[in-house]
Length: 302
Image (cartoon, rainbow, N blue to C red; front, side):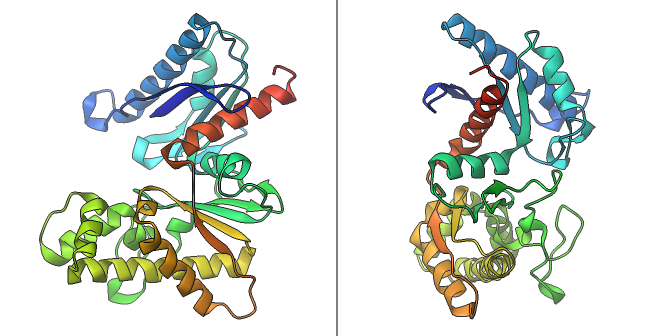
């Protein structure tokens, strides 16, 4: 968990990273353990803010999964949350009447890139982090699209067909995430060679060294990503796409083939600029803070 104390002008006054508990770490179930760790973090950061002489105006919490904004519940398979009342639990943990914003982590990251990062000044754009999974933050006509908590799951769109399609964690076969996420690169390289690798980082090192299996795995990922970007461009017409997540560390090895692949496929569509996101691993935290400050402004608490 990446967390911090952020001032109204975006300055990070305190930052820290805490481990996310795993399901096996407690017999009560991983979902409850993760929630308790989240609540503990929020309470302790609030206490630190007070001890440091600050007043907490609002709190922003962002999580993966599908968020029911009306009821404040979250469904997130990787956290073992099923309609978990996260917002109610947060409100119960914070005794003061402090506004709390609960939002999706990728949409928050996209909001941060829109407000102060690679997407600043755009009205139609996309933030696409390529990490353990793949999801998108969609900015359409100047607004961040939520779709009642369901929007942006580009990673769970089908782009692989036939015998090459693999079963995704979502239950569908052939999702983008099964071939183009950082986790997929390592898994597919191991399946192809029988050699266990230390994540996508090692696959990229093997790619740079000329390993043919790493090259094939990489080309498969690029082809699926180009398909996804062309589809998104055709449907939503972004002027800029910011790629983030762990894979963006590959730099132009990733970005240039995507630019060339998209350019070659477009005919009448408006061609987007494809760039690297700039806020790195703190994008979600900064987005959460910005959303919290926006809420404080709305309620006259800033």
